[in-house]
Amino acid sequence: MAIANRDMNKVVENDTPIHDWYRFVLSFPPHLVRDYCDRLGVGPADRVLDPFCGTGTVLVECKKLGISSIGIEAHPMSAFASAVKVDWLPGPDDLLSHATRVAAAAERSVAAVAGGCEPFLLRRRICC
Ligand SMILES: C[S@@+](CC[C@H](N)C(=O)[O-])C[C@H]1O[C@@H](n2cnc3c(N)ncnc32)[C@H](O)[C@@H]1O
Image 1 (cartoon, rainbow, N blue to C red):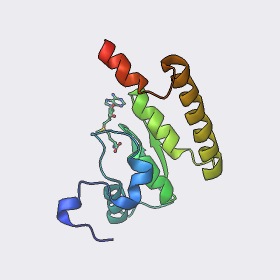
Image 2 (image 1 turned 120 degrees about the vertical axis):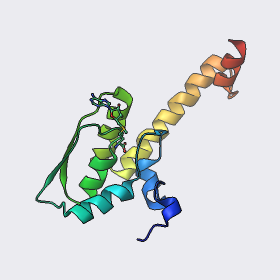
Image 3 (image 1 turned 60 degrees about the vertical axis):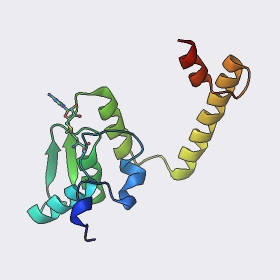
Image 4 (image 1 turned 30 degrees about the horizontal axis):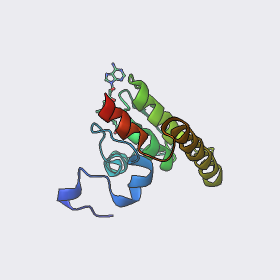
């Protein structure tokens, strides 16, 4: 897929579900990883090391290309995002079911604290 020069540093729409569900300004776009693997001739016989893997852009794109990779990341949140993004074991139905249970539990917590579905966080912030 050809990418216009003005969009070179952006995450393309097809990549947003896996690479754009959190805010991390340091990441580079996934299509660059694919492009570099292609240009450098990196393939399934190789192994890629990303010693500063951030939220795992390189790891995910390598996995999609069938290339094994290793990532190292110092920041716990980024390391967590990377680990989640390369764990493809949970199926979509299981994820949806789990997310639904988490949302229901969060709603119950908010209702218990705020006495209804008012914006609990906003009220707390105003009170501080
Ligand atoms: C530019 S970001 C990497 C972004 C990543 N390529 C991506 O697209 O998500 C650099 C990362 O290196 C991590 N880092 C910095 N020093 C490090 C160190 N000594 N060991 C491991 N990770 C380190 C930072 O926490 C940061 O997440």
